Image 1 (cartoon, helix red, strand yellow):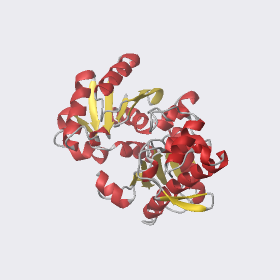
Image 2 (tube, helix red, strand yellow):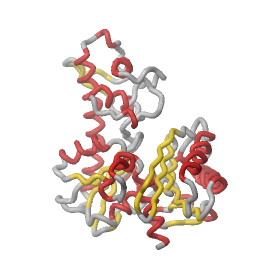
Image 3 (tube, one colour):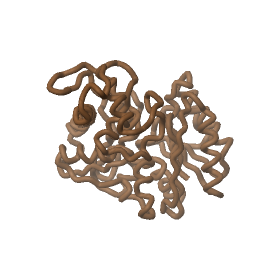
Length: 340
């Protein structure tokens, strides 16, 4: 079983003989309700039945419920050790699989290493690529060359932010005030309010690209997740109500936010690609809920696309779920390979 413990979602994948046979995704906002994680782990563990080995990665240690990332790694590791049985390993990125007892001495290898698991799996199946995973809040960009992960020298969030390999732009949960400072609207440019009125889920819904299975958290106003509700929230970002303009105007406004987000990720991709570690022919391997956005980006970069699920042996009806849960799926296979 591979486990990917985020601050907002828990994802898990069960593999049998390197074939992923089941995937789970649960809402676990541990910054306000840590018990939601414990309950979700118990439920998944019960549904999975006996499991020989567990491999765990995390990003939830950055949640502000913890006073430090060290405290977060240690608590999450302790909780998982208390709730699971069998062989339990923590994934430490380039450091490989570690024991629960290694959590304290390897905090910065373990913290936020889920991107490495997905990229490492991809590197075992494709010689060169730019691996990209766009989740609900962030996007990872990792070069793969000569069948190896070519991440920047530093693997911490700080280092990855500086190198362009980590971008805080996500498919659904990113607040629109973090996407653009100003937007075009009916022929004028209007500043965007610094208020948590709407998210990218509203944008994706209005432009028609949202799969509702990717929007599991409450809307910014805790209101209805309808087309009209999303238009209302987006309109508020520029100090207006939906009655102030026609429906088409709000769709164009949503497209403006979507474009601003793609440009931010595009800039990061150009920064990573400028290191010339991969050739112009290398494709994008895309993962995460935001695969539709990443496919648009691939077109701009004039590169081919490989879906991460194509690199995983699985039933066809699990492909979307595996795309959303790439690190957990990768870990479930990597853990088996490590012990074979």
